[in-house]
Amino acid sequence: MNSKVKWRRSFRYAYEGVKYALSTQRNMKFHFFAAFIVLLLALYLHLPKLEILFILMAVTLMIVTELINTAIEKAVDLAMPDRHPLAKIAKDVAAASVLVSAVFAAIVGMVVFYEPIDHLFRSARQAEGHSFSAAMVWILLSLVILTIIVLETRFSTKGSRLRLSLLAALAFAIATFIASYVSITFVALLAYLLAILVMLVLYDKRSRSFPSLILGGLVGCFVAACVYYLVN
Image 1 (cartoon, rainbow, N blue to C red):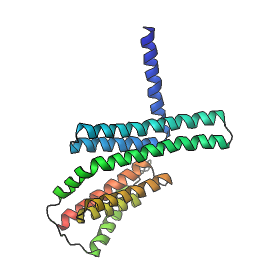
Image 2 (image 1 turned 90 degrees about the horizontal axis):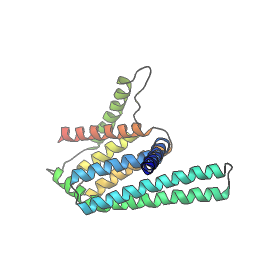
Image 3 (image 1 turned 90 degrees about the vertical axis):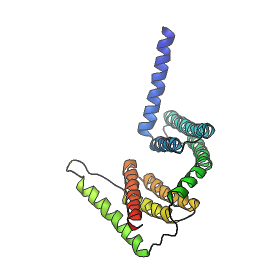
Image 4 (image 1 turned 45 degrees about the vertical axis):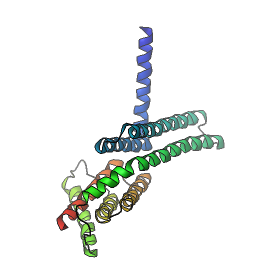
C-alpha cells in the first residue's frame, strides 16, 4: 500500500511539473500546440506506423528537452540569484539542447510529411494555369484588413476585446494565395514557412499573444481560400 501511495505521489508531482512548464514557459505552449497540429496531420494523412513512430520520438524529445531546460533554469536561479558567467553557460547549454531537438523535429517533419503533402497539393489542384492579376493581390490584402477590423470591432465588448494579429493574417493570406497558384509544392511550403517565421518573430517580440497570432493566421487562410474559390 505504501508503494502505491508513493507511486501516485510521484505521478502527481510529475504532472504538476508538466502543468507548471506549460503554464509559465512560452516555448512550451508553442511546442504543445505544434505537437497537437502535427499529430492531427499524421492521422489525417494516414501515415504508416514507422513514420508515426519517428514523429512521436521527435515530439517527445522536444518536450523532454524543454522540461529539462526549465528545470535547469530554475535550479540555476535558485543557486545563483545574481548574474554569474557560469550560470549563463548552464542556461545557454540547456537552451542549446532544446534547439538541437527542435531542429531534429523539423527535419523529421520535412522528411515524413513532404510526400503526403505533395500528393495532397497535386490532387487538390483540379486545373492548372489559373491566371491572376496584381489587382487580385491588393483586393485580397484589403479583404484581410477589413475582416480583421470587423471581427475586432464586432466581437469586442467593454470588458474584453477580441485581439487578432493583422500581420499574421496578412502573412498567412499571402502564403495561402501563393500555394493556390503555384504548381510546385516546395514553393508552397516555403511560403507557409515564411508565414510561420513572421508569426514566431511577432510572438518573440511579445507584440501579440499566441492565440491572437493563431486566430489571425486562420482568418488570413480562410479569406485567401474564399477569394481563390470565388475567382476560379
